[in-house]
Length: 278
Ligand code: PAF
Image 1 (cartoon, rainbow, N blue to C red):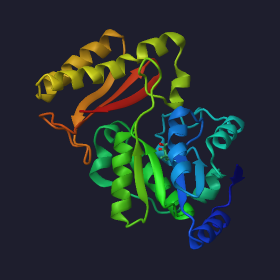
Image 2 (cartoon, rainbow, N blue to C red; image 1 turned 180 degrees about the horizontal axis):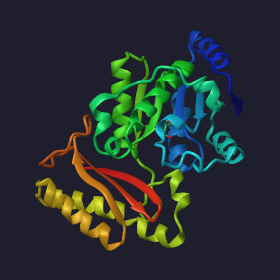
Image 3 (spheres, rainbow, N blue to C red; image 1 turned 90 degrees about the horizontal axis):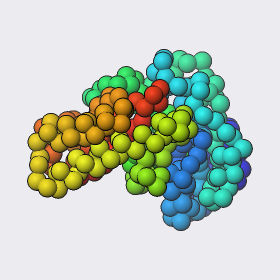
Image 4 (cartoon, rainbow, N blue to C red; image 1 turned 30 degrees about the horizontal axis):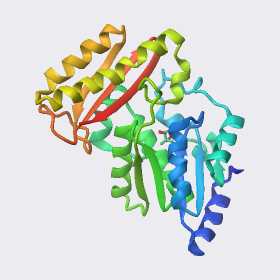
C-alpha cells in the first residue's frame, strides 16, 4: 500500500485510472482502524480496480469540548491493516492541506444536521459533509463505502451526493459487532474493562425495542421506555434513544417497519452511539 498526501497528484493519478476504464473504490476513515473498517475495504477490493482509504481526523466535525486532540491515532498499525485488507492507496493529508488558512467555504446540511446526533453535536454533520465533499472531489470515487453504525451520517452523505449531483455510488454496510454485541468503534479504546462490560447494554436496549415492535407494540414512547430502563440499569447515562425515519431522521411517534432505533449514551467519559433497524 502506498501513502499519498498531495490531493492534486492523487486526483491526477486517479483521473488516469478512470480514463483507462478502471473503477475507483473509496473508504473514508479517521484511522485507528478496526474490523468495521476492514468490512468496508473488503467489498471495495472485490468490486473496484483501485482501492483508496483516506485517513484524516477531521477537526471540522469535532465540537470545542470533544475529543479531537485525544482521538486515537496509530499510523503504522493503520498502514498494516490497509495493506492486509488489500487497499492500494492511503490518502493521509494534514490539516493545513485540507483546510489551508481556514477561509474556505463549508457545506450546510440543513435540518437533518439539527436533529438527534446533530442536536447533541452542533455543527458535526456540516463538518462531516464538508470533508466528505472535499474527499469525493479529490478522489473521484465510483463507489464509496460507509458503515451503518453511523446511520445518520450515512443519510447525510446520501443527501449530500444527491444535493450536489456527485457521481458516486454510496454503499452502506452493516455494523460489525464484538462478540457480545457492542458495535465496533475506534472510541471503544477509551473504555475501562468495567465500562466495556457495561457498554453492551446500549445494543441490548435497542434490540429490546426491536423485539417489542415485533410483538406488535408501535407506540414510540413506550418502546423507547423499555430500552431506557435496561440501559440505565447498567449505570449508563442516556443522551437519547429515539425511533426515527431512516432518511430524514425526524422522530416517528409510531414505529414502523424500516425505521431506525438510534441511541447515544455516555459510559463514564466515553460517548457511544449505535442503531438497529426495525
Ligand atoms: O465516519 C467517519 O470516520 C468520518 O465521519 C468520516 C466519514 C471519515 C468523515 O470524516
